Image (tube, rainbow, N blue to C red; front, side, top):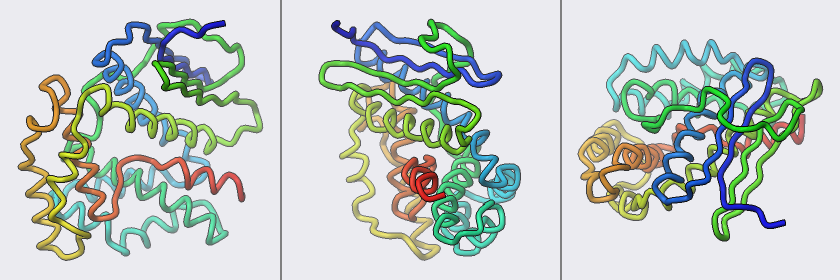
Length: 263
């Protein structure tokens, strides 16, 4: 049986029942749909981390950090002192397992702290209702895509024994996929964006952070993306800048995977 080209996302867990499916496989439509999926999963990830960390405490710390100027936020996020504040918010005694969760907590903190200072979410609305048929009666999260040679299936059937962190892991993995594919379909020049920051190596000092922020704020984004996707491209510029200070706004699935394997 031939599978039609499509991208679909559905989630059915407790009160969260949403879904949508794209069949109009024009490049710009795919980019917009993937951006909507990314926004959807990023909104839900914190809820599924509450069993392993004090998400409310992290949000409170993020609010405190967000009151600073942008360069100060980056300085604070990369500070060892911030890691020390996050440590007690991790619900894990094993040091190796705690380290994996700390990596996740740092990403969550960065995303929330930067939320009102810079664009971290795509312009598309998240999926908030069920616009397609659920193909599984069981509670689940499901993301599938087929377009040419690109085929992906990310799926988790949820039961009473499913750790909430495993759902967070899958959601972050879906987000990772959208991040990698949006620039292809939106024609965002990631190489060009990276080259804009190429003269800046690893950033440590306060003047270096200020220089980095200045470059971020003055990137000629119109050179790196079509008008339709300039706001999206700004998020990739932010990612490129944050990489210089060892910070990310995206919850990484790998540390959650390692934590779940060994816990």
